[in-house]
Image 1 (tube, one colour):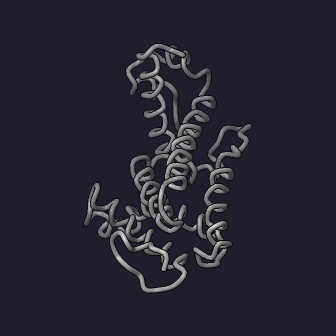
Image 2: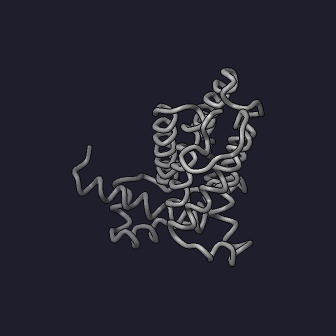
Length: 215
């Protein structure tokens, strides 16, 4: 383990690298830009990450780690399955809103903007599997409506990614009407309502704390 200041520098490097990788892509990012933004020499950056590929992988691993944390916290919490799913959705939207660059990195991956010998991490499938398994279990218990759980989870991921990466470009007026926390809450309402309509077993759509209650 490094000292406190060293850990702080490493975290700052990851933060800056995430921003550059999201905006410029892997091939468009230069390590000396990152070092300059952090306020260190390029040689000091290599003390923490021996190569740009190592830094790239560290950024991805940090994102997967934070995503897994919110998934487990929500799904292992108190409440019925739909309440847990709502908690997960709200936490996930907050996470993407706080780190939109991560979503851009994954979009760039889909276009082949990765290191030459890059091997896709199994973490994404593993995290998808956690949520899919939870939904499937709720369906088997007849607490959630039957539908393809993987398609639903992928649809949610795509929807949230779209709101925070493409909407500002395709519908700037719509996006600019609400800024900051108000805009994030707006996205949450859209996403939660869609998922509730898909998974609610029966009854009318509610609001507030009862919006995702099983009836």
